[in-house]
Length: 197
Image 1 (tube, rainbow, N blue to C red):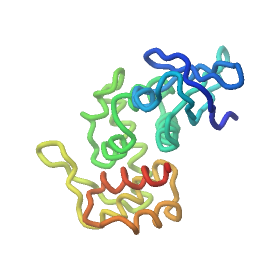
Image 2: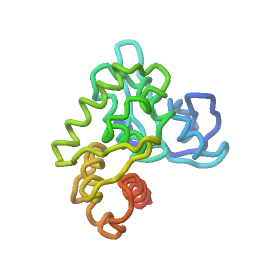
Image 3: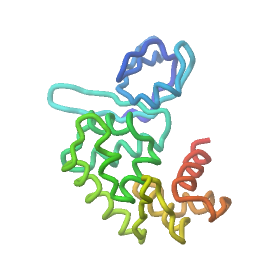
Image 4: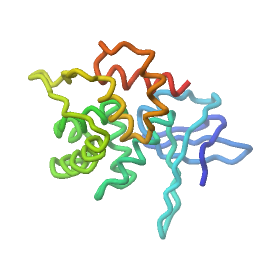
């Protein structure tokens, strides 16, 4: 319903930012990552999601479309509400969420407040199926917890970005300009950065 809000960032507290547009202040619940990217008393654009409940209408705002898309993907998981999705995205970047799902990394997801092992496993189970539908093979983890990219990193990045709602047609032109030697995480990060310009 409301695609974005653009105006001056006039007030912020942990968990929300107020953006003034044409004299109206919109209270947008948001992540710490978004709050780090916007500056008080400067003009900003937040991409929004309007959550309508019986007793309230809540506006969620994000600095990038990738973060918004990840939020929407997370709330599509059974048992993950908007506040839980915000908690995950306040702890992990979009790229880290995708990589945690790809690598079945329960520990990373449970760093977010309120996310226990069972919910983390459900998120991985439901969203990893989407990755598999796009032909991504598993990504293994090193003992230090870092992702080891197998061959075919470009196709894995395409599959991971598909979970965020990006079609292969959208991302392939960007990925084709990047080195296949990059890790999957680097490919995802650089693609999202270039698409966000």
